[in-house]
Length: 392
Image (cartoon, rainbow, N blue to C red; front, side, top):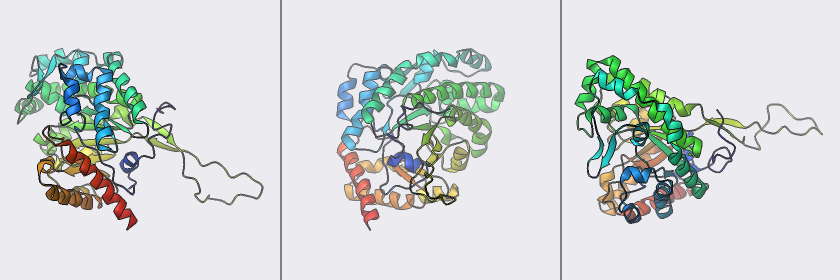
């Protein structure tokens, strides 16, 4: 399905941006940079705006969600906005009793731990999201209108992470109940994963259709799984979730000035270059997933996000040297002395040069106590390093 002609990718607003080119595997002169969780808790303007508003209420307020998304782009001059929302938003909208408790995270009213629990959950029809996601579409459109040539990244939680929250009833260190259901009742687990894939896939698709120029599937808890368990019980559902955006394409104008396959006779107009059909780039990121990188790519991703545990040159080797990478500055070093952080960032950039293309990011999200000025300085460092390298 082709995106609407007014979509930022179709209209050409963002298709030539550093971020989109890097996601497509073309290395720009300057490495693009953005930060997971850049929109939110580390910014004083965010904390001021959020006073008196619960997290999920903020996510479902189009004006507020848009403003929060735009704040770090204005402040840090990053190369992309990441849509301010939460992975449990589609669960709330489809009818699940879930709330985000400050200091703890998503908490479910009822844990889903038996086949009967799963049957009751999957009776909630994901198709109601087509209407219920209106506030999300409004927020995305409002944001992309303000961003202009800066691309917006849409995101959603991977099916396993959503399933883990549903089964555990909230955050967990080992996800033992989820893993027990996975092995103890594979049929119930399969129904649960198919449902979470449909719910989160629709959430992601809505963001892209409304104007996001890329999509990221975020698997917070996949690192708790063995490679075999991931491949057998999780990867098919992640592929199903991504399929909701894999069919979305746009026509990118062909490069001019390229030699033609055959000479053009005198007096005959040179044919117009054929536009290239591109898919919306998809990033797949997980925490603690160094052993799963190849499987995470194989579900249909274009880019693999790497956390801080695996050096980018090693991640590139594991992926065969053909996959654009995103990552992987250690968030802990954001509070280190600047010379320590600078050396680390330059090392990440150098290792990232082994891959076909690289988008600099953190190996996880921005810690809430991070000094925003450090992030701004880090963006300037990355941009300047690219300019210096290209000049040399």
